[in-house]
Length: 562
Image (cartoon, rainbow, N blue to C red; front, side, top):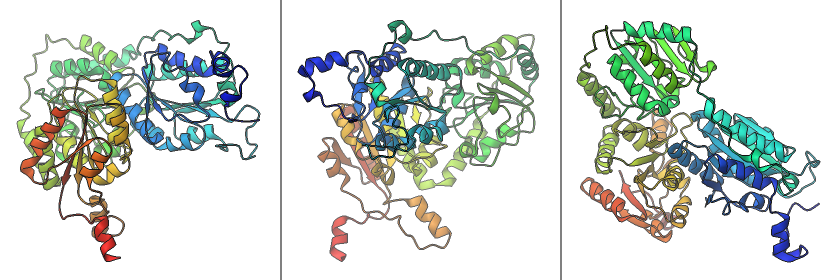
């Protein structure tokens, strides 16, 4: 049995082939996804997934062809954060699916909604190990090890039901990646699924928590003198309600990096996404009532083993498993953060309680700023130059690069959730540029800027051509410290002679130009703001190269010493 589609040999030619594949399982799956509002998919066409690509144009869905499936996963994540819908990735079987595994792992750790579609070996061919193209021992088990779930479907109806199950998870559960494996013979077969079954199902009412827990939480908050709110990634869809609750309580708000912007960071009660700093953590731990909304308070978000609350803890999460994770609660509420916050507001009257005056947070902000600067003064100074030059409404995507996690993450003050695209827990390299591409595909109203280190950019430099091909307005800022500077310092601190960390650099400007983008170099601090503003205003794909520290070794220099 051949696993390849050979349309040229089919009787009747292309027209007959088109009729044969007019309503396959592949189309039924994509039609169902489209009914939920998804308008773009990310991936790479391959021999085995063509029937997932055939219906895209007819369904009005944009196909973004990344140059590596890891970039497809991160692009889908950037798209999802701007739309509130799951990102969708189409891979081919075997290596294509495996290439997307880092993105699947990222989506799981960061609780991001992602649907990965892949073809699988035909039904009856499982585990035969006979050397067919892209043969994989157990693709579904491979993905299930790092995703929320992976399903190998046996019928078209099962495939459509799997799509509905994915959207049900994203709507009322903790959003995490799912994988649907469709056997090749099923993918290419007539669907036989009624079109009514492919229509998006109504969104269920949000879980509002149980009444007794709500009353207990409201009683604690009604008498709180030093309340503090922590908003995590699970609270980003509750921005209005969280802001209103903070104002009712007079409570300062801290966010995790995944929750950044849930309360406008220009708001007088906002302390920003600074939980990684001791001064901010101290403020949270000193609260007489600490409200934690949609966060597991993991070590990667805290840069500390745990948060030690000294007062009562009210915790709200969509997942019951999260309520006691890393911090024990006084009152735990399982429910949607927006719905629960709204109900708490109704239970905490503004009177007869005396309205709380807004606390003077300036001394605490000064302590946070001083700690930020002391951590990495040169990096923070550069991050400030970049932040000052960016448009106030810019969406900024970053990698696990020092310029981001030691600088921009703490310095940028953003007004809306998902204006910083980042992966604080998985902390991967190669995320920022494709995520920025996905964000830009999702919307054209706000400027999008990727800020990455040189080491990080080399993980995904091929995606520059994706941005060019998609005709996007996108600015890439490459902060070049000659390689993996933090790891180099880690080696030195351990008494290891630096090895594997001082990297050969391309001519970044020439490389950008070769891709069809526009390269610029800002070598002095006083050139950075101008270069960034010109790049953003010019449109198209722009790369601004900011060299830092000693001049890196070039390939020409290496040849000269060989």
